[in-house]
Length: 155
Length: 143
Image 1 (cartoon, rainbow over the protein chains, first blue to last red):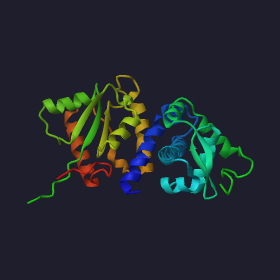
Image 2: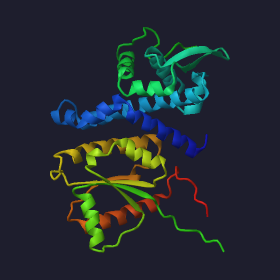
Image 3: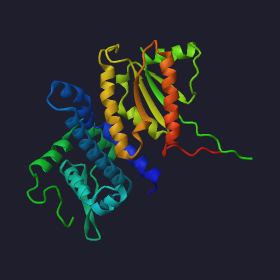
Image 4: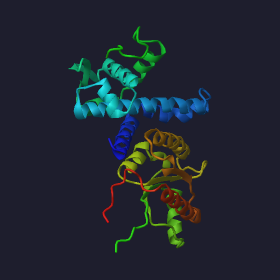
């Protein structure tokens, strides 16, 4: 993947992410939240950066699955440049919320595909922040008892 | 003989209707010269500018994006420019994340009486973008 191609893909992922309700809500409310004293500007920056990165990575994955799915976590990691463990975590979250489904295997690894046309997934993302909630539960309290953010070591 | 042409950046400027656009207009009517690299898009308020607009401009090949609004406290809609300020913060953050220089995006306050300032700002920003070079996303121009 060339430099410009990679940049173009990341930019598209950022555009997709900024259209999602989960990012828009934080960006829209950030000033009010900071002014209220509930959170410092630095903390808000950290939070938005963390969410933005997550959402951009998920959109990179969704676009790759749309173009060439089904793909394994390893293939997705190579194509998107996102760390393998992060890809696995994103896939787990997206499976839980029903955006992605497991579809067969490739070289002994589970392959994943979109659960619905990308347009429908995007529309749903514009109104529903459930991935954020699932990801937070996953990271904070260990939604899946074993693995702590990793989807089955062999996946 | 083919000569290497100097890079002329393409800059998209979002100007608010009440202050910055009037400032740009004043620069024009006062015959103050400034680079022709800027393409102005008039919006009713800088707070109307969605981060997606800025990112789309980069996607379509803009080398730089300038967002101008009323000075804090002067917004026609009370706090639209303050909302824009927060968004600008996240736009810069986003550009860093994707690997595009955050200096390609700039937010500035320009009032309706600041024609000279508007012209100066465009000159400075054009120089900054010239230093940075063409956006990697810009389509190759045919010579």
